Image (cartoon, one colour):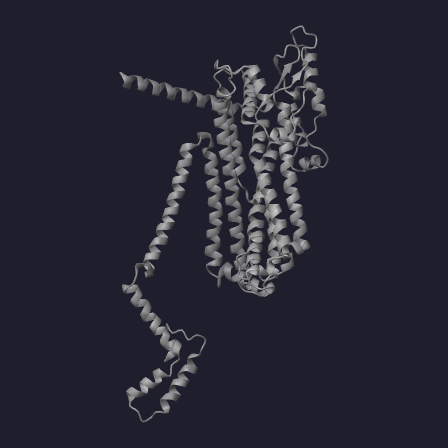
Length: 560
């Protein structure tokens, strides 16, 4: 009874047909013996039945006495060992980071790990309740909805898997970019602690003078002591401030390490005076605390962070689903190639998203640069005698404050809509309509702009550029015909257009570390000086000095 052979692969031939054929053959040879009849019946079976037995016998023989590479257990063990190896590398990498980063940055790593864990939990949920059971529960519901409204049972289930993969890739890429910012922060901290004394102290006396700072910053000469009496009046200081030029966009972007270290020492001198701090105060420890706090806030992703991705993904996925394609990894993915640039419903929104992202990033940089330049102490050389002179920050002058506007045009309405409040002091008023909530608004602004850039890079590159390149290569090599591609004539323009958008997004990410530094500076000096950061920095300096004293005492004891 062929119906009762559980392992038998009938290859699309019904068991009844095979049984009928065998019975007919047996009837025609009624004079033979039972043994002969049985042989005849077996001989009438299709070749695929005999081949099945041969393959099974061959497989068993190979597994038992063949090469170890043909043994399934060998590969199963190797796969499990590889997974354990990856877990080990991951754990060791985390331990290495914790040991080699400043203590203040440890919460940043913890926050990034928590966010990655949250995305992984969503994947586990989808695997258990949706993709693992397509007949019951949520999986069955999705299959029914997909078959009813989209005409294909598995489209929505596969769409869930695809969208989770996109979210995971975007999340990991965002944390990778955040890691680049963390690395830039670490380098900046090291530069502040080394370069400020080693490079700027040109005369080797162990101290950085005002003249040495002026040389490093390449300050311009301005007439300060107008009457030449050797003393600066309030009027002379005001006039000198108004004649100084503010640093431009590209000047700020091209600042050298030496110039940035000089600016930091200017801030240090101002901090020592305002906060009555000792000369031993280390400004790099102060900024280490500020950077750590701001980075921690930047890498924390609330569920609302994902909302801006929904329109872009929905528009692209709509084109795919209309062609019965789930994603770029689908077997029929090329059916959508060429349609992303020829479809106005996706083409124009993608232009709008790219323009928004570029303008957003440039504006963040410009505004925070302008605010920082208003807050920095002003260093000039007096034309009378060419002596370097400290002047107060530009925001201290009423006229310069009145002329300063960091919320031009529609930006004022946007900042008010985002929660801007009236500034309580001159520092907060520099943030324009954002006012008292300026630090919070622009901290989130930097994070969301970086997020949008990362989303464009991952989504447009993976789902359009790479897919189109594969389609173009296969088409040119004759592996597929033009009928397999949605719009073959628009394939090359589509690759070029979306490659440009991805490239622009990558360029914007180059601005991210510098924009972050500008933000950290503009929100931590003058009237926004963080007392808690000064306390933590002072405490850290004292602990390090105690450790050095203990090490020196131990070395002295061991030497005796």
